[in-house]
Length: 462
View 1 (cartoon, rainbow, N blue to C red):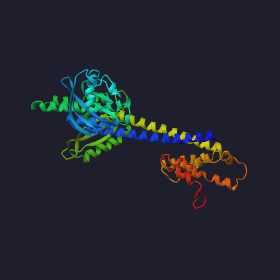
View 2 (view 1 turned 45 degrees about the horizontal axis):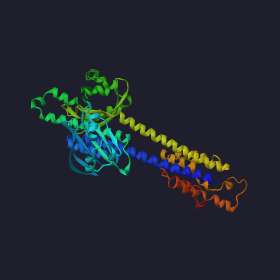
View 3 (view 1 turned 135 degrees about the horizontal axis):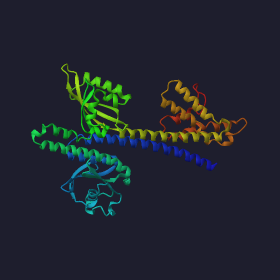
View 4 (view 1 turned 180 degrees about the vertical axis):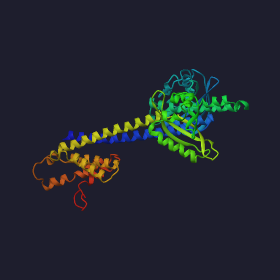
Protein backbone atom coordinates (compact mmCIF):
# COMPACT_ATOMS: atom_id res chain seq x y z
CA UNK A 1 0.00 0.00 0.00
CA UNK A 2 2.86 2.37 0.91
CA UNK A 3 4.64 1.78 -2.40
CA UNK A 4 1.40 2.33 -4.27
CA UNK A 5 0.77 5.65 -2.51
CA UNK A 6 4.34 6.67 -3.30
CA UNK A 7 3.76 5.89 -6.99
CA UNK A 8 0.53 7.88 -6.96
CA UNK A 9 2.26 10.82 -5.34
CA UNK A 10 4.96 10.68 -8.01
CA UNK A 11 2.31 10.77 -10.75
CA UNK A 12 0.63 13.80 -9.22
CA UNK A 13 4.00 15.50 -8.80
CA UNK A 14 4.92 14.67 -12.41
CA UNK A 15 1.68 16.21 -13.69
CA UNK A 16 2.36 19.38 -11.73
CA UNK A 17 5.93 19.57 -13.04
CA UNK A 18 4.85 18.94 -16.62
CA UNK A 19 2.19 21.64 -16.49
CA UNK A 20 4.66 24.13 -15.09
CA UNK A 21 7.22 23.18 -17.77
CA UNK A 22 4.61 23.66 -20.51
CA UNK A 23 3.58 27.04 -19.15
CA UNK A 24 7.18 28.22 -18.74
CA UNK A 25 8.18 26.95 -22.20
CA UNK A 26 5.26 28.62 -23.95
CA UNK A 27 5.76 31.84 -22.01
CA UNK A 28 9.48 31.90 -22.80
CA UNK A 29 8.96 31.13 -26.49
CA UNK A 30 6.20 33.70 -26.88
CA UNK A 31 8.29 36.23 -24.97
CA UNK A 32 11.40 35.58 -27.06
CA UNK A 33 9.49 35.89 -30.33
CA UNK A 34 7.90 39.15 -29.17
CA UNK A 35 11.25 40.55 -27.99
CA UNK A 36 12.93 39.55 -31.27
CA UNK A 37 10.22 41.24 -33.35
CA UNK A 38 10.25 44.38 -31.19
CA UNK A 39 14.04 44.47 -31.18
CA UNK A 40 14.27 44.09 -34.96
CA UNK A 41 11.87 47.00 -35.43
CA UNK A 42 13.70 49.10 -32.84
CA UNK A 43 17.16 48.38 -34.24
CA UNK A 44 16.06 49.23 -37.78
CA UNK A 45 14.02 52.28 -36.75
CA UNK A 46 17.08 54.56 -36.71
CA UNK A 47 20.09 55.24 -38.88
CA UNK A 48 22.17 56.57 -36.00
CA UNK A 49 24.78 53.89 -35.34
CA UNK A 50 25.30 54.71 -31.61
CA UNK A 51 21.55 54.32 -31.06
CA UNK A 52 21.55 51.07 -33.05
CA UNK A 53 24.34 49.68 -30.85
CA UNK A 54 22.64 50.80 -27.63
CA UNK A 55 19.33 49.21 -28.70
CA UNK A 56 21.21 46.05 -29.69
CA UNK A 57 22.83 45.66 -26.25
CA UNK A 58 19.56 46.34 -24.43
CA UNK A 59 17.70 43.76 -26.51
CA UNK A 60 20.47 41.16 -26.04
CA UNK A 61 20.42 41.65 -22.27
CA UNK A 62 16.65 41.25 -22.21
CA UNK A 63 16.63 38.13 -24.39
CA UNK A 64 19.27 36.34 -22.29
CA UNK A 65 18.33 37.83 -18.90
CA UNK A 66 21.79 39.33 -18.47
CA UNK A 67 22.88 42.08 -16.10
CA UNK A 68 25.20 44.05 -18.36
CA UNK A 69 26.60 44.45 -21.84
CA UNK A 70 28.49 46.56 -24.36
CA UNK A 71 28.99 46.81 -28.11
CA UNK A 72 32.03 47.77 -30.15
CA UNK A 73 32.56 49.01 -33.69
CA UNK A 74 35.56 48.18 -35.85
CA UNK A 75 37.51 51.39 -36.41
CA UNK A 76 40.87 51.45 -38.21
CA UNK A 77 41.62 47.86 -37.31
CA UNK A 78 40.64 48.17 -33.64
CA UNK A 79 37.44 47.23 -31.82
CA UNK A 80 36.30 50.35 -29.97
CA UNK A 81 33.83 50.16 -27.05
CA UNK A 82 32.42 53.54 -25.97
CA UNK A 83 29.62 52.83 -23.47
CA UNK A 84 28.52 50.17 -20.99
CA UNK A 85 25.00 49.14 -19.95
CA UNK A 86 24.87 48.02 -16.29
CA UNK A 87 21.36 47.08 -15.18
CA UNK A 88 19.92 49.64 -17.61
CA UNK A 89 22.26 52.42 -16.53
CA UNK A 90 24.45 53.70 -19.38
CA UNK A 91 27.88 55.12 -18.63
CA UNK A 92 30.80 55.99 -20.94
CA UNK A 93 33.89 53.81 -21.30
CA UNK A 94 36.81 53.85 -23.71
CA UNK A 95 38.28 50.45 -24.47
CA UNK A 96 40.24 49.72 -27.66
CA UNK A 97 41.06 46.12 -28.55
CA UNK A 98 43.43 44.98 -31.28
CA UNK A 99 43.21 41.62 -33.10
CA UNK A 100 44.32 38.79 -30.82
CA UNK A 101 43.80 40.81 -27.62
CA UNK A 102 41.25 39.37 -25.21
CA UNK A 103 37.90 37.93 -26.24
CA UNK A 104 36.98 40.73 -28.71
CA UNK A 105 40.40 40.32 -30.34
CA UNK A 106 39.75 36.59 -30.72
CA UNK A 107 36.32 37.28 -32.23
CA UNK A 108 37.96 39.76 -34.64
CA UNK A 109 40.31 37.03 -35.87
CA UNK A 110 37.81 34.14 -36.05
CA UNK A 111 34.54 35.98 -36.80
CA UNK A 112 32.91 33.45 -34.47
CA UNK A 113 31.10 33.85 -31.16
CA UNK A 114 32.84 33.11 -27.88
CA UNK A 115 31.37 31.93 -24.54
CA UNK A 116 33.01 31.77 -21.15
CA UNK A 117 31.18 31.01 -17.94
CA UNK A 118 34.36 31.30 -15.85
CA UNK A 119 35.90 34.59 -16.92
CA UNK A 120 38.27 34.82 -13.95
CA UNK A 121 40.18 31.72 -15.07
CA UNK A 122 39.79 32.14 -18.85
CA UNK A 123 43.10 32.99 -20.53
CA UNK A 124 41.33 34.89 -23.33
CA UNK A 125 39.78 37.37 -20.91
CA UNK A 126 41.84 40.49 -20.18
CA UNK A 127 42.07 40.75 -16.36
CA UNK A 128 42.14 44.55 -16.34
CA UNK A 129 38.96 44.73 -18.45
CA UNK A 130 37.22 42.11 -16.30
CA UNK A 131 38.06 44.02 -13.12
CA UNK A 132 36.98 47.36 -14.60
CA UNK A 133 33.61 46.03 -15.75
CA UNK A 134 33.13 43.43 -13.01
CA UNK A 135 31.90 40.44 -14.99
CA UNK A 136 32.29 36.70 -14.32
CA UNK A 137 30.71 35.29 -17.49
CA UNK A 138 30.25 36.58 -21.02
CA UNK A 139 28.97 35.85 -24.52
CA UNK A 140 30.57 37.78 -27.41
CA UNK A 141 28.85 37.74 -30.84
CA UNK A 142 30.33 39.24 -34.04
CA UNK A 143 28.35 41.64 -36.25
CA UNK A 144 29.01 40.58 -39.84
CA UNK A 145 27.69 42.16 -43.03
CA UNK A 146 26.02 40.18 -45.80
CA UNK A 147 29.31 40.41 -47.68
CA UNK A 148 31.14 38.74 -44.78
CA UNK A 149 32.80 41.93 -43.51
CA UNK A 150 33.26 42.25 -39.73
CA UNK A 151 31.51 45.45 -38.61
CA UNK A 152 31.78 45.06 -34.85
CA UNK A 153 30.73 42.83 -31.98
CA UNK A 154 28.67 42.93 -28.80
CA UNK A 155 29.18 41.31 -25.42
CA UNK A 156 26.68 40.51 -22.71
CA UNK A 157 27.81 39.84 -19.17
CA UNK A 158 26.62 38.01 -16.06
CA UNK A 159 23.52 35.95 -16.81
CA UNK A 160 21.20 36.23 -13.84
CA UNK A 161 20.78 33.49 -11.22
CA UNK A 162 24.32 32.36 -12.10
CA UNK A 163 23.00 30.47 -15.11
CA UNK A 164 25.53 29.67 -17.85
CA UNK A 165 25.42 31.00 -21.40
CA UNK A 166 24.72 28.29 -23.99
CA UNK A 167 24.00 27.64 -27.68
CA UNK A 168 20.36 28.70 -27.27
CA UNK A 169 21.55 32.18 -26.27
CA UNK A 170 23.84 32.23 -29.32
CA UNK A 171 20.95 31.42 -31.69
CA UNK A 172 18.87 34.27 -30.28
CA UNK A 173 21.69 36.81 -30.44
CA UNK A 174 22.88 35.90 -33.94
CA UNK A 175 19.45 37.00 -35.20
CA UNK A 176 19.92 40.36 -33.48
CA UNK A 177 23.43 40.64 -34.93
CA UNK A 178 22.06 40.19 -38.46
CA UNK A 179 19.52 43.00 -37.93
CA UNK A 180 22.22 45.26 -36.50
CA UNK A 181 24.46 44.57 -39.50
CA UNK A 182 21.70 45.67 -41.89
CA UNK A 183 21.05 48.82 -39.84
CA UNK A 184 24.77 49.70 -39.75
CA UNK A 185 25.13 49.10 -43.48
CA UNK A 186 22.06 51.25 -44.21
CA UNK A 187 23.42 54.00 -41.96
CA UNK A 188 26.75 53.97 -43.75
CA UNK A 189 25.03 53.98 -47.12
CA UNK A 190 23.04 57.03 -46.04
CA UNK A 191 26.20 58.72 -44.75
CA UNK A 192 27.91 58.09 -48.07
CA UNK A 193 24.81 59.34 -49.84
CA UNK A 194 24.90 62.66 -47.96
CA UNK A 195 28.58 63.12 -48.81
CA UNK A 196 28.02 62.53 -52.51
CA UNK A 197 27.89 65.36 -55.01
CA UNK A 198 24.36 66.65 -55.76
CA UNK A 199 24.59 65.67 -59.41
CA UNK A 200 25.45 62.10 -58.42
CA UNK A 201 22.39 62.00 -56.16
CA UNK A 202 20.20 62.65 -59.19
CA UNK A 203 21.71 59.93 -61.27
CA UNK A 204 19.58 56.86 -61.80
CA UNK A 205 22.55 54.53 -61.47
CA UNK A 206 23.18 55.75 -57.93
CA UNK A 207 19.50 55.27 -57.04
CA UNK A 208 19.69 51.74 -58.40
CA UNK A 209 22.80 51.12 -56.32
CA UNK A 210 21.01 52.19 -53.12
CA UNK A 211 17.91 50.14 -53.91
CA UNK A 212 19.84 47.00 -54.72
CA UNK A 213 21.85 47.05 -51.47
CA UNK A 214 18.72 46.68 -49.35
CA UNK A 215 18.02 43.12 -48.17
CA UNK A 216 14.34 43.40 -49.15
CA UNK A 217 12.61 43.15 -52.51
CA UNK A 218 11.59 46.61 -53.79
CA UNK A 219 8.95 46.92 -56.49
CA UNK A 220 6.54 49.30 -58.20
CA UNK A 221 3.19 47.71 -59.06
CA UNK A 222 0.77 49.24 -61.55
CA UNK A 223 -2.76 48.62 -60.25
CA UNK A 224 -4.43 49.56 -63.54
CA UNK A 225 -2.27 47.22 -65.62
CA UNK A 226 -1.94 44.54 -62.91
CA UNK A 227 1.81 44.14 -63.34
CA UNK A 228 5.13 45.04 -61.76
CA UNK A 229 6.78 47.83 -63.72
CA UNK A 230 9.93 47.69 -61.59
CA UNK A 231 11.65 45.14 -59.34
CA UNK A 232 15.11 45.48 -57.81
CA UNK A 233 17.77 42.77 -58.05
CA UNK A 234 16.80 41.28 -54.67
CA UNK A 235 13.89 39.59 -56.46
CA UNK A 236 16.42 36.95 -57.56
CA UNK A 237 17.37 35.92 -54.01
CA UNK A 238 13.75 36.03 -52.78
CA UNK A 239 11.85 34.49 -55.70
CA UNK A 240 14.55 33.14 -58.01
CA UNK A 241 13.45 35.26 -60.99
CA UNK A 242 15.38 38.13 -62.52
CA UNK A 243 13.85 41.60 -62.74
CA UNK A 244 13.52 41.11 -66.49
CA UNK A 245 11.66 37.80 -66.05
CA UNK A 246 9.21 39.47 -63.67
CA UNK A 247 8.71 42.31 -66.16
CA UNK A 248 8.06 39.88 -69.02
CA UNK A 249 5.36 38.08 -67.03
CA UNK A 250 3.34 41.29 -67.30
CA UNK A 251 -0.23 41.14 -66.04
CA UNK A 252 0.03 37.34 -65.69
CA UNK A 253 2.64 37.56 -62.91
CA UNK A 254 0.18 37.18 -60.02
CA UNK A 255 -1.67 34.41 -61.83
CA UNK A 256 1.61 32.57 -62.45
CA UNK A 257 3.34 32.75 -59.07
CA UNK A 258 0.82 33.91 -56.42
CA UNK A 259 -0.49 31.19 -54.09
CA UNK A 260 -4.08 30.48 -55.23
CA UNK A 261 -5.43 30.68 -51.69
CA UNK A 262 -4.12 34.24 -51.36
CA UNK A 263 -5.51 35.55 -54.66
CA UNK A 264 -8.75 36.94 -53.20
CA UNK A 265 -6.88 38.64 -50.35
CA UNK A 266 -4.48 40.36 -52.78
CA UNK A 267 -7.35 41.38 -55.08
CA UNK A 268 -9.23 43.00 -52.19
CA UNK A 269 -6.03 44.67 -50.94
CA UNK A 270 -5.29 46.19 -54.35
CA UNK A 271 -8.90 47.28 -54.80
CA UNK A 272 -8.82 49.09 -51.45
CA UNK A 273 -5.54 50.84 -52.29
CA UNK A 274 -6.86 51.83 -55.72
CA UNK A 275 -9.91 53.51 -54.21
CA UNK A 276 -8.90 54.64 -50.74
CA UNK A 277 -5.08 54.68 -50.59
CA UNK A 278 -3.73 57.75 -48.76
CA UNK A 279 -0.46 59.48 -49.53
CA UNK A 280 2.14 58.76 -46.86
CA UNK A 281 0.17 55.87 -45.32
CA UNK A 282 1.82 52.45 -45.21
CA UNK A 283 -0.26 49.34 -45.89
CA UNK A 284 0.94 45.87 -44.88
CA UNK A 285 -0.05 42.41 -46.10
CA UNK A 286 1.33 38.86 -45.98
CA UNK A 287 0.97 36.36 -48.80
CA UNK A 288 2.75 33.48 -50.53
CA UNK A 289 4.54 33.34 -53.86
CA UNK A 290 6.14 30.44 -55.68
CA UNK A 291 9.92 30.57 -56.00
CA UNK A 292 11.42 29.56 -59.33
CA UNK A 293 12.58 26.35 -57.60
CA UNK A 294 8.96 25.42 -56.85
CA UNK A 295 8.92 26.22 -53.12
CA UNK A 296 6.36 28.58 -51.61
CA UNK A 297 7.78 31.65 -49.87
CA UNK A 298 5.93 33.80 -47.34
CA UNK A 299 6.35 37.53 -48.06
CA UNK A 300 5.49 40.50 -45.84
CA UNK A 301 4.87 43.63 -47.91
CA UNK A 302 4.78 47.28 -46.82
CA UNK A 303 3.30 49.47 -49.55
CA UNK A 304 2.46 53.12 -50.11
CA UNK A 305 1.01 55.29 -52.88
CA UNK A 306 3.49 56.08 -55.68
CA UNK A 307 1.36 57.78 -58.37
CA UNK A 308 -2.27 58.65 -59.12
CA UNK A 309 -4.58 58.86 -62.11
CA UNK A 310 -6.11 62.22 -63.16
CA UNK A 311 -9.32 61.24 -61.34
CA UNK A 312 -7.41 60.86 -58.07
CA UNK A 313 -7.48 57.07 -57.86
CA UNK A 314 -4.20 55.32 -57.11
CA UNK A 315 -2.37 54.19 -60.26
CA UNK A 316 0.87 52.75 -58.86
CA UNK A 317 2.12 51.61 -55.49
CA UNK A 318 5.72 51.20 -54.34
CA UNK A 319 6.54 48.55 -51.79
CA UNK A 320 9.13 46.44 -50.05
CA UNK A 321 8.68 42.71 -49.48
CA UNK A 322 10.61 40.77 -46.84
CA UNK A 323 10.93 36.99 -46.95
CA UNK A 324 9.41 35.82 -43.62
CA UNK A 325 9.23 32.11 -44.47
CA UNK A 326 11.64 31.04 -41.73
CA UNK A 327 9.68 32.94 -39.10
CA UNK A 328 6.45 31.30 -40.25
CA UNK A 329 8.10 27.88 -40.09
CA UNK A 330 9.37 28.61 -36.56
CA UNK A 331 5.84 29.48 -35.45
CA UNK A 332 4.60 26.18 -36.89
CA UNK A 333 7.32 24.26 -35.03
CA UNK A 334 6.30 25.95 -31.77
CA UNK A 335 2.69 24.95 -32.40
CA UNK A 336 3.72 21.37 -33.13
CA UNK A 337 5.82 21.28 -29.96
CA UNK A 338 2.86 22.47 -27.91
CA UNK A 339 0.62 19.82 -29.46
CA UNK A 340 3.20 17.15 -28.62
CA UNK A 341 3.32 18.29 -25.00
CA UNK A 342 -0.46 18.33 -24.92
CA UNK A 343 -0.63 14.75 -26.18
CA UNK A 344 1.89 13.74 -23.51
CA UNK A 345 -0.25 15.36 -20.83
CA UNK A 346 -3.35 13.60 -22.14
CA UNK A 347 -1.44 10.32 -21.92
CA UNK A 348 -0.58 10.92 -18.27
CA UNK A 349 -4.18 11.87 -17.48
CA UNK A 350 -5.40 8.69 -19.18
CA UNK A 351 -2.86 6.66 -17.20
CA UNK A 352 -4.15 8.14 -13.92
CA UNK A 353 -7.71 7.36 -14.99
CA UNK A 354 -6.78 3.73 -15.61
CA UNK A 355 -4.94 3.56 -12.29
CA UNK A 356 -8.11 4.64 -10.49
CA UNK A 357 -10.15 2.06 -12.36
CA UNK A 358 -7.69 -0.72 -11.49
CA UNK A 359 -8.42 -0.03 -7.82
CA UNK A 360 -12.18 0.02 -8.40
CA UNK A 361 -13.05 -2.97 -10.63
CA UNK A 362 -16.81 -2.42 -10.22
CA UNK A 363 -16.69 0.90 -12.09
CA UNK A 364 -14.00 0.03 -14.66
CA UNK A 365 -14.45 2.24 -17.73
CA UNK A 366 -16.72 4.64 -15.84
CA UNK A 367 -14.45 7.72 -16.09
CA UNK A 368 -13.82 7.13 -19.79
CA UNK A 369 -17.56 6.85 -20.50
CA UNK A 370 -18.32 9.94 -18.41
CA UNK A 371 -15.63 11.82 -20.32
CA UNK A 372 -16.99 10.78 -23.72
CA UNK A 373 -20.61 11.50 -22.81
CA UNK A 374 -19.97 14.87 -21.16
CA UNK A 375 -17.77 15.98 -24.08
CA UNK A 376 -20.50 15.04 -26.58
CA UNK A 377 -23.12 16.91 -24.53
CA UNK A 378 -20.90 20.00 -24.31
CA UNK A 379 -20.42 20.09 -28.08
CA UNK A 380 -24.15 19.53 -28.66
CA UNK A 381 -24.89 22.48 -26.33
CA UNK A 382 -22.62 24.69 -28.41
CA UNK A 383 -19.74 25.03 -25.96
CA UNK A 384 -16.49 26.36 -27.46
CA UNK A 385 -14.04 23.59 -28.40
CA UNK A 386 -11.54 24.52 -25.67
CA UNK A 387 -14.19 24.54 -22.93
CA UNK A 388 -15.57 21.21 -24.13
CA UNK A 389 -12.05 19.77 -24.05
CA UNK A 390 -11.72 20.88 -20.42
CA UNK A 391 -14.90 18.97 -19.58
CA UNK A 392 -13.47 15.92 -21.36
CA UNK A 393 -10.25 16.06 -19.30
CA UNK A 394 -12.17 16.56 -16.05
CA UNK A 395 -14.34 13.55 -16.89
CA UNK A 396 -11.27 11.34 -17.28
CA UNK A 397 -9.98 12.06 -13.76
CA UNK A 398 -13.03 13.19 -11.78
CA UNK A 399 -12.74 10.10 -9.54
CA UNK A 400 -9.01 10.50 -8.86
CA UNK A 401 -9.83 10.97 -5.16
CA UNK A 402 -10.64 7.25 -4.95
CA UNK A 403 -6.89 6.72 -4.75
CA UNK A 404 -7.30 7.67 -1.09
CA UNK A 405 -10.15 5.19 -0.46
CA UNK A 406 -9.01 1.76 0.81
CA UNK A 407 -9.13 -0.80 -1.96
CA UNK A 408 -10.97 -3.19 0.38
CA UNK A 409 -13.93 -0.82 0.36
CA UNK A 410 -13.79 -0.16 -3.39
CA UNK A 411 -13.75 -3.89 -4.18
CA UNK A 412 -16.22 -5.01 -1.50
CA UNK A 413 -18.82 -7.20 -3.22
CA UNK A 414 -21.66 -6.63 -0.76
CA UNK A 415 -23.51 -3.63 0.62
CA UNK A 416 -21.36 -0.96 2.27
CA UNK A 417 -21.75 -0.11 5.92
CA UNK A 418 -22.57 3.46 6.91
CA UNK A 419 -18.94 4.02 7.96
CA UNK A 420 -17.65 2.63 4.67
CA UNK A 421 -20.02 4.87 2.72
CA UNK A 422 -18.82 7.90 4.69
CA UNK A 423 -15.26 6.99 3.68
CA UNK A 424 -16.36 6.71 0.03
CA UNK A 425 -17.84 10.22 0.30
CA UNK A 426 -14.43 11.76 0.95
CA UNK A 427 -13.21 11.04 -2.58
CA UNK A 428 -14.45 14.34 -4.18
CA UNK A 429 -12.62 16.35 -1.50
CA UNK A 430 -9.52 14.17 -1.88
CA UNK A 431 -9.66 14.63 -5.65
CA UNK A 432 -9.88 18.40 -5.22
CA UNK A 433 -6.84 18.36 -2.93
CA UNK A 434 -4.87 16.39 -5.54
CA UNK A 435 -5.81 18.63 -8.47
CA UNK A 436 -6.16 22.12 -6.96
CA UNK A 437 -2.49 23.09 -7.33
CA UNK A 438 -2.15 21.83 -10.91
CA UNK A 439 -2.38 24.78 -13.29
CA UNK A 440 -4.97 23.40 -15.72
CA UNK A 441 -6.44 25.90 -18.18
CA UNK A 442 -9.89 24.71 -16.98
CA UNK A 443 -11.52 24.37 -13.49
CA UNK A 444 -10.75 20.64 -13.34
CA UNK A 445 -10.30 20.59 -9.55
CA UNK A 446 -13.71 22.21 -8.97
CA UNK A 447 -15.39 19.76 -11.34
CA UNK A 448 -13.88 16.83 -9.43
CA UNK A 449 -15.00 18.43 -6.15
CA UNK A 450 -18.60 19.01 -7.24
CA UNK A 451 -19.29 15.95 -9.36
CA UNK A 452 -21.37 14.18 -6.67
CA UNK A 453 -23.49 17.27 -5.89
CA UNK A 454 -26.98 17.71 -7.34
CA UNK A 455 -28.92 20.74 -8.52
CA UNK A 456 -31.53 20.25 -5.77
CA UNK A 457 -28.87 20.64 -3.07
CA UNK A 458 -28.49 16.98 -2.22
CA UNK A 459 -25.42 14.84 -2.79
CA UNK A 460 -22.01 15.32 -1.26
CA UNK A 461 -19.59 16.65 -0.02
CA UNK A 462 -21.68 19.84 0.45
